Image (cartoon, rainbow, N blue to C red; front, side, top):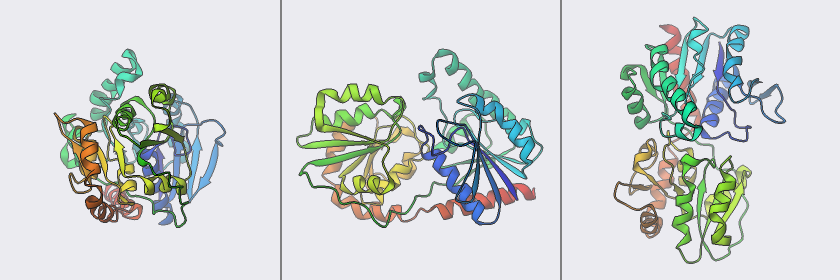
Length: 354
């Protein structure tokens, strides 16, 4: 079977994140089962036009907007048996360019993110996501990653029966990770793309008032300069690591007492499970969507409820960190990319059989 995956970025892109890794791991699983898998995405600096990684063929063309215009050519040239169209805000509208089955993958709705794009793009983007896409994909198979995201899709008019939930997996902890120097400080960590809706400022505020504490910020993004300026008054209490290797990322998580995720919106939150692999609880907002599924409140972390202050909940959770650690590790052990890929393959098979 030939399967075409459409996504605006891949994990090698400077702004790539968890949603891109999800699709890549699904593609790798499908390729391992003998399927021909093509991942069509945007080009970026130093990335080859074509490459192959872990059995998946990558094709890159177009930039931030051009990638959407180039996608129909890929559909017509590759002639896939099925297309997986990823909706990161707006989909590729692949259903308009092929009669083959199309599965629409969406991690979460982007209503809260559109305002940072400016007034014109905000209105156009939300119109395409909330009004046009549900009409174009009426009756198509949707896949999302959490109950919260499913509820958001139903609110946009998508039939509940058309939505399947396939949770994120997680990569195993690397066999060899460095042991970091014990500086006798209390380390908290945030693992995230640095963009406005992640609200890293709140994590900085939470640590700023703690004696002997430091926040390790792992990740990069176009909001980094603004965050560095915001953190400047706190000196070495905030350390920006940018992108790091997988072993070093896990070393930072292993050293941390808590993982802070003050994001406005998450489809699931892969970083929640990565932290839990090390027995590290996460503090996040209950209103952020999918984290209400990836965090078991007061067992593997804390969901900040309306009326509660993020910083106060962080302090409270630090006092219960050791009690939460075993539950967090057990929770993380339930997730794997193999299971995610297996569920996705079953959905594709069902779509093709209809």
